[in-house]
Length: 528
Image (cartoon, rainbow, N blue to C red; front, side):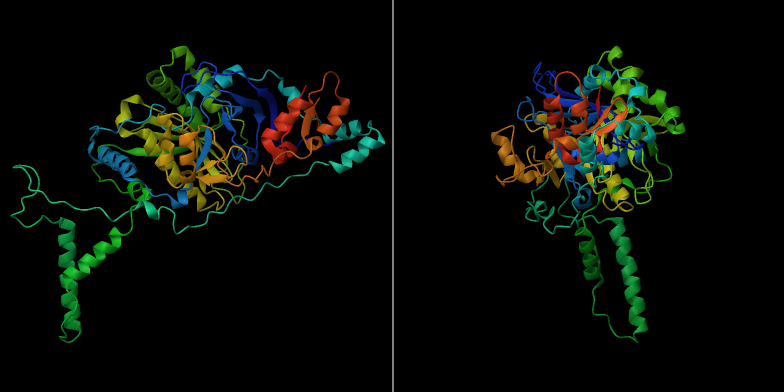
């Protein structure tokens, strides 16, 4: 036995809950999941949990019962290092630039976003309020090392031998999958086979074919500059005529740039004109009431949340007050960490605030973890729906992930929550390519293109095609599960001998099989 160090995760497992109302198909009791309350959690433990299909809503961490729930929710991750924005993504980025530069707020037909904006199911809010733990904080504080050692001496020799065998070790997590460039990534999507069809325009519409085509002023300036350059070269070469036509050089220059598609950063970090109508600032604020920026913007942020929930999700005022906002989007079990090898902002939970002309118009709630940026929720001012803020913020978060990767090389994925194929309006997350879905049985990542055909035939699917493959992280030794009982940390095998009353082995077995061997040996399972 040992006392817990300050960075241990402490969880309270609830088991398989009764069915909830589904926010997608509206089934009254069809939404089934396992759940646990996280009193505290390290970022590495949460990273490992979401890689096994778990997700948090406030401090409540849940895992859909995939083969039973009405709308299976598959964990989806995007690969930002290989991401190229689609035409529709570029349209959203251009629309924002136009709005900032000129104040243009015209809405283009077909630009409407999915009802859930960009991510995560808002119905999870009910989990937070229903399953809040009532355990006193004093019970969650493990005793000192001295006290633990005193209790240890009370055990017989057999227990001492077992203790040596199951001495708690700091379990190293599996190394992340390396982000390797694939030549095929994204290349098959770009096609040059489009045909141009020329038709005679109606009067007043289209170009006049009897006149030479219009040319961009920028191209004309380039051509003039090239002419001067060539003239200078001709004089310096003692009159030898140049063999290169300026128009040829110009076209070659244009082609080389045309072959390089614009990245998100080319749209996001472009300089606005001095007389721009609006100014947009994105601030990353740690979710902590000890942080001055978080504190000073809390009231404005909570008011925006209520406005969004009432307009978009039809909540009543009592369902989206400051208390609900705090429990849902400000209370996080994640312990902030700032290791030297990590990103400058550190790991933990953050609010990414979008300030337009000094006012918050959107907030992206994110978790920054060892291998990814995990999107939790987004709420925005409904008055700015025309800006497609759900899509825009997702693209900003992809760019942000790439930025963090420059300092923390292992951080190279963007987790978008759950992909729900059985709900058509929730399929838009699959448009951020390349992306992968998590196999619900073996917990390996599979490219979404390989998953879609099987999802068309069955809403629940095992994506791993190797039928012999199993869950490599499955529980192998139940006795090694770490337990916190009466403020003492001990392996489950020892707790089992001390426990009075009916056996809880079935519940512990279920918990361990869902979180996996690594997390079960690292996290503390609270037992009363």
